[in-house]
Amino acid sequence: MDFSIQLSADYPDKNYGGDKVYQDMLDQAILADQYGFDAVSITEHHLINCLMMPAPLQFAVKIAAHTKNIKIMTSVVVLPLHDMRVYAGEVVVADILTEGRLLLGVGRGAFKYEMERLGVPMGETRARFDESLDVLQALLTEEEVSWNGEYYQFDPLTIMPRPVRPGGPPIVIAVMNPEGIYHCTRRGFHIQTTPLSGDHQLLVDQVAAFKRAKAEMGGKGQGLSLSLSRVGFLASSEAEKQERIREAYDYYSRFDNVYTGPGLVDAGMIRPLPRKQSMKELAESLLICTRQEMIDKLAPYAELGIDRLILSPNFGSDPQLTRDALQHFAQDVMPFFIDSSSARATATL
Image 1 (cartoon, rainbow, N blue to C red):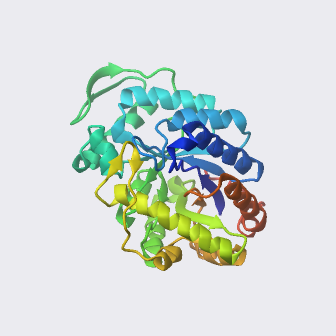
Image 2: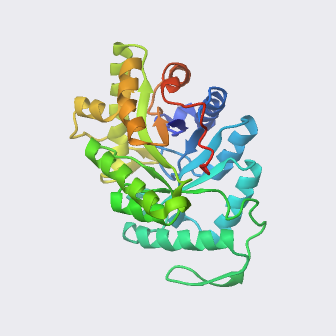
């Protein structure tokens, strides 16, 4: 099992400054590269101070300029917010400038507040995503592309420059529903998923759907990978563990507002709202724990055959504490799960 760090830009205080937020993210990426993480992940969100990254491809290029080996995943780009005729060219340029380390994670969008203020009704996100993905694939694989669909109609055109890698960078689909995982895998996509607040059985079902699809594909599915995203933090003591859990609880009081709640935002700042879930219940669903507990919680993921764990440690903690935790995670936890003797030579990710 490989490991990635989600560089989630959390911006609870405007006085801290966006420049410092992104420098913190870059520092984490550099550290992750030095300590042998497989990848870093960058989300896309607009108009809000939670997961604040309106330009993930630009930031991917910045990270590539300061690192040597680490893969850089957009986790995820919201396709319905982009015109694929423009975006496909931007993807090719980013893939060139990241020297082939770009992984293009894509999704439909989850926050009603940002989607509808940017002109995309939530009821249309699935249809728009499906067509956008088809258009993007066509533009990255074919020279002359024309289209006559529901959301795209255009005469023959060719994106320039042409992709250096055939078909462009590997595409990773963000999907939670097990049946959706099955169908996306069958189409030849890598998968990123999470059970969020779901139970372990949901994760078992998600993994089973991925494996079933791969098995039915035979050799064509051999190189496909499954990434699992989880919020987590390696605490140095029980006292620190409880402090990080409190920070995560505060974070989710804002996150839930725009993910499942009413979307109350004041000048870009998400309003914290009371939560129905208790702090104890939240703690049980996250990977905020000390060393041995972390190893014990990760073991079932490795046994299930998860290819990559995307750890998200950014929910309001002090930046230096977060960097220290990542260093100790790399030194004290990762060696139990990374098989250095087999680097998944058959995988394309």
